[in-house]
Image (cartoon, rainbow, N blue to C red; front, side):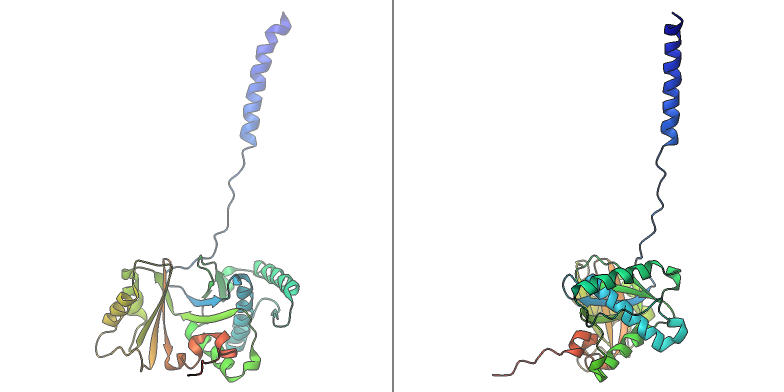
Length: 267
């Protein structure tokens, strides 16, 4: 009888113990690190690449950018770690190099200290690198393309296509377009590039930017001294101004500078 009387008490105590145990074993919430993103006011460089080569292109560009940062800005632009050479590697070596490069990126002391931060973009064949001072995207990309045009033996990339510097970024809407334009513009031609975006049309962007340039400046899409680049990808808008030699340097397309597409002969 005594045992029967104890059972409910033991079960009750056991139930309380189980409840306490459950409380003790609750999984704590994880603090996930925030992935890099593009924010209004940022500057950087868009890049296009071969299909399904976004990862390899990211590694190539980081090495190329680090090399030029060291060249142009000295110790302030020193890369964290050795530069990876992908030029004469086979597929297996490249994969190993990528793993090593990614590990090097993870070991960077602080994201704030990085001159170039790759940002994942949900657009096929498109990359973005955020930049920080002292890097000025337009002059930085211009120097890379100028060197490539002057000496083809300097080629260090296999998968990079076009580089498009962005002086200032904003949201892809008309209000942001106006805000960014007022900060960037001068007397220029206008060339929009739009991907995966439906809200703003090419002609509307040209008209709106031209209105913001205002008098006494005129828009001439053929004979211009400087060119306004407006790139819109999904919900992101960027703008920059490049010099009149933009066409000379194949619109900053490294692949075309190093290996120009043969011109079709007229029949």
